[in-house]
Length: 425
View 1 (cartoon, rainbow, N blue to C red):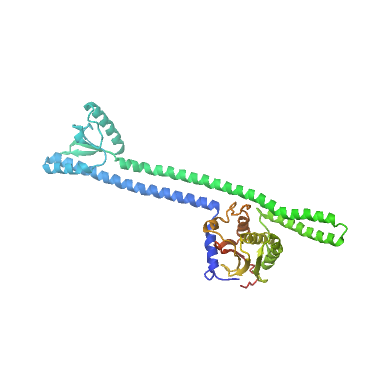
View 2: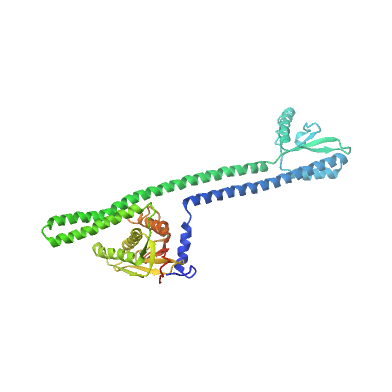
């Protein structure tokens, strides 16, 4: 039963689907947090880089503007005036030209750029607003001095960042808030889904327990009535007592199964074929009573051993066979269990194939979710428990290899084999 991972198509599919579920919930939270932090840091760095470039561009522009003004002051030529007219429209940030003392020059609309001064106001009101804006500009950048040929300061150019730069500086913090809110909502939604899933599990466990216990209990009530009726018939009495022993054993098995859920079960070296055979025999006796004509075949190998918990491992096969039987709607039903090449060395793999109604891709994606079921009277816990038993307790894998509506479904189970035993395919 051993084969390399490259050689087995089933193994590759098992591996691919297993990887999708290999992350635990806390790992998902950690990874999402790390991704969120990386995104925030990346956005901050990228935005800051853009802001720095814009600031440098604005500094170069205002420096060029001041240099042209200085040349015009020194030479008073037409060429400098022409350059001023060319450069001024390229300035996209507030800029004010003042005298040497920092008082705005008049006319204000000619010596101030992008200040949005209301020209309908009085000269004094305009000067007051410009002075307040200059005071604010001093906090950000030192003014650029315009000097004459002797080095004396004739005027000063005050400036501040454009609206775009100011918005870009705020943008990272807005983004951080948005990402934080997003992560918070995601965390709350994740916890809600988790609690909802746990609720489905508890409800499903209670109903599954009632369902599992109901059949043998009903049988025992019937056997008691038969005992009363046949108490004088020794042969009938003994036969009935024997059937009651079977039902009591069934109750014990059910109790053991549920007691093992949530705890670490003890794994023993077991013959896998023997467990499968016991489960198949159990169903073969009951299929006729269910009014179903189903052929249950198995291609097993008595030399295949694995470290399993027989109670739980048998429960998995019960769930899979029961689901397969309930999915069969044709007259001649078929359920086949067979060993197939495993994905990894020292592992064994089995397929459970049926010719039932199959599943749509949408149903296939949800089939293992706790509480999900397509049955009118189902509780959606059997397959969820089966996957947990195989994957968490037996360190194996349980997937739907394929399912075609109208043709049937194939499940694959893969678990570690007992390395002291040589298995055959």
